[in-house]
Image (cartoon, rainbow, N blue to C red):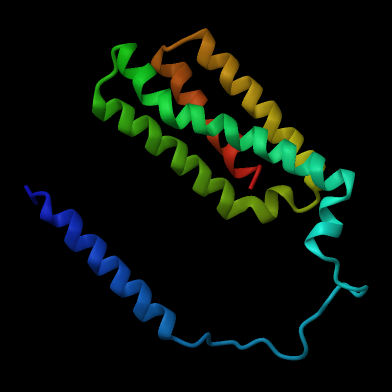
Amino acid sequence: VWGHNAILYSLIFSVLAMLLGMLLKPSVMPQGEARTHGGAERSLWALLKEGPVWRFLLCVTLLQGAHAGYYSFGSIYWQEAGYSASTIGYLWSLGVVAEVIIFASSNVLFRRWNARNLLLLSACCGVLRWSLMAYSTELGWLLLIQILHCGTFTVCH
């Protein structure tokens, strides 16, 4: 109905709207001095010498690295399982919708959680998601697998 140029025009319009929005000043400006946590600033090298930093980086790298394979081969896997391109598109969209819902409500849901427990939850969701992916390609399971994206991706962020 719209043609392929509609995508280009909508992208141009969106970027222009975003740039215009950036020119607006916030209605409420921050007041007072910027707060710091006290203590001297540490260099990047000093931080990288600490064990917890390396454990954190390894954990996040593994959690996010799992998404790279999923993003690269998920559609191919589903296509070989017999799903149409539109169904695959809907599955990806479902994951994004679940992600946005969790991002929007994360302050309420995870206010009292620390970083360790959030990463642990994300890892557990990842193990469950990959296990279900190996178990079945039935649509009902794929819907659950895609909803788990909010646990693997969003919670990790």
